[in-house]
Length: 229
Image: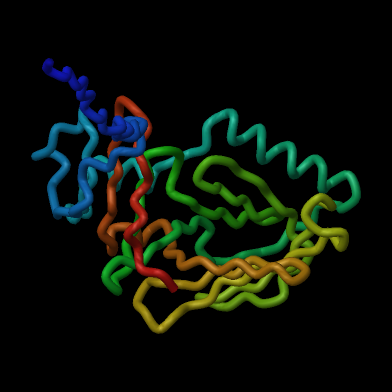
């Protein structure tokens, strides 16, 4: 009499499926290698990350001639009105000191300008009674309280600012030359907060290459490969 033995094969446990993590399109950086290019030789209807070395392209012209739009002007007006509620406008004479300043970055130990995908290249404007701060995505302003130093290539200002920033409502701004040609150090401080930024006068923009993050159709990651201080 035969014996029938039922043999069941052991099933191997199912492995979890490794689904790729979806990355939003705006976070995908298609161009991680910076190449020197003339904008005229590129298709600027697409995302392009490149170094503009022409010194006379439309990108340079737009940067030099940039003006704040109505929304930015409204932000500036708001800060001025808030501060002037407690502090009277004081007029100072700047003589021939440059009024407009553009921020700089360092790339491979060289100073460059960065045109971001989103927003504007940070810049600063010194008027006879105020300092305007045009950050990448927003703007604000302080009123001048005192002109503490003014030389051909150096300035020191005491500023009145909003109480939300500091209870003292006092801040300081200085601009002074560095050892590098056409490169200045802008320092803005209040309380124990000190912010430093390399800048150049607006009329010296063409002395520097521009890193352009051109993104006409959708938001892209900003370039993060600049030198760290």
